[in-house]
Image (cartoon, rainbow, N blue to C red; front, top):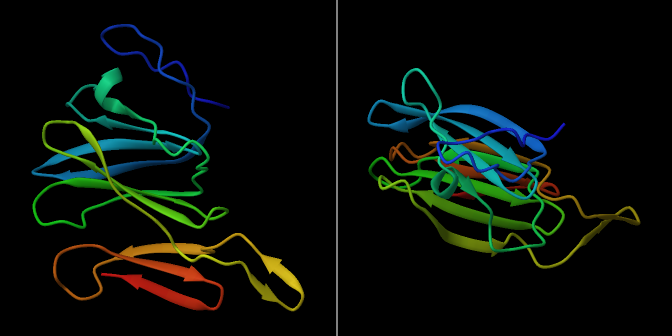
Length: 159
């Protein structure tokens, strides 16, 4: 099922989304939000106490990369301060994208890169779906989340 019945104060219908994930996340400074992510777009709904805040211009984000299909989508804090960041990974295109959601409740596209450039062959089979798994943890104790990607038979770590 797709989520398309979320309406904000302006009663404008939000674009439909086929949910991949839904998580309650810590946004820092005692704030929290609900991240609903789909293959092509995502919503970040700040928790305002009794209700989720829905604002079409600030809640919804659709990346500029039209061909992207997220299979991994998660919120993290990779910068100092209380900026919430969303990381989206398309394992078919091998692309990682990083978005900021700042204190002014505005989205900005921060980073996009190809995780690797070529398809690997294993026992005569092409392995296209990479990374196979993703983790987030502060590995070096600096207070910022680090990204762990399982790609083929290797672990890639981004500090």
